[in-house]
Image (cartoon, rainbow, N blue to C red; front, top):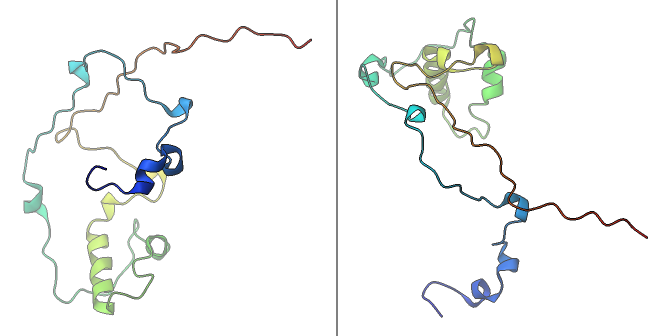
Length: 140
């Protein structure tokens, strides 16, 4: 028996769920990833330099046009009351400072800045059936 394996792991792969069904099997195709689909990443400026300083005593939360009390309720910052009240205030303050990064609807959703990342292109190959269709047999 190889190191690290128990008798139950060697028993049968069906018990462990190691097999995939045929429809979920991935069949790689031979080819080369197109160069025009490659994503280039660059940093025109250091993003850490533009971060605001975090206050030691954060102010009370005042809703903005983008981050409202309803939006904060959907985030559910402290569901188990694990954080202290000052930590919750700090979390609300940081969320308000970065409210343009949050999207609560499809209209607010944005994309990555193109000066940091080139547009994503997903190359697609035409489908080639991996199995022939069965010959239809009529019931008698």
